[in-house]
Length: 159
Image 1 (cartoon, one colour):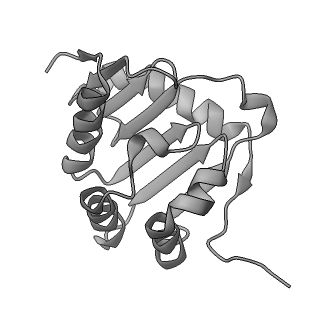
Image 2 (cartoon, rainbow, N blue to C red):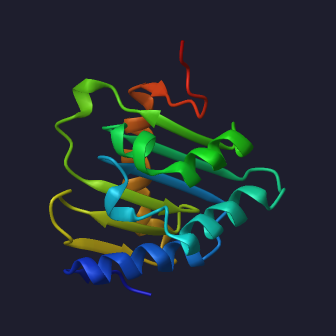
């Protein structure tokens, strides 16, 4: 299936769900704060839970965010999944020198991807079942992950 250009937020929203509905075994996400992906939506949490709970070797969800406030304040279901499925689920706060990156990546099984070109706009590229087309985005994600960062914990520390 050839890639398709996404130009509206409603198309973007449908594309996110389409990627999650493909029941991937690995999912890699890079985003400013996850808010446009609406991962707290019940259908999306259910899809993430299926990915993590399937019980097969090699299942992995890796999320890299540039800002953690949204995840910490508005993503209780995602943090619950982090408590239950760590280390299969990792959420990493990207180092400050990556703050200049403006794109967003959602990559499933190295074959499907949704690439938003700029975090302020819906304009994206949806790739379905094309591992060759996904390779540059996988490489970009690995480079971002290789820059390090701090893991987010699901445990709230207090005095």
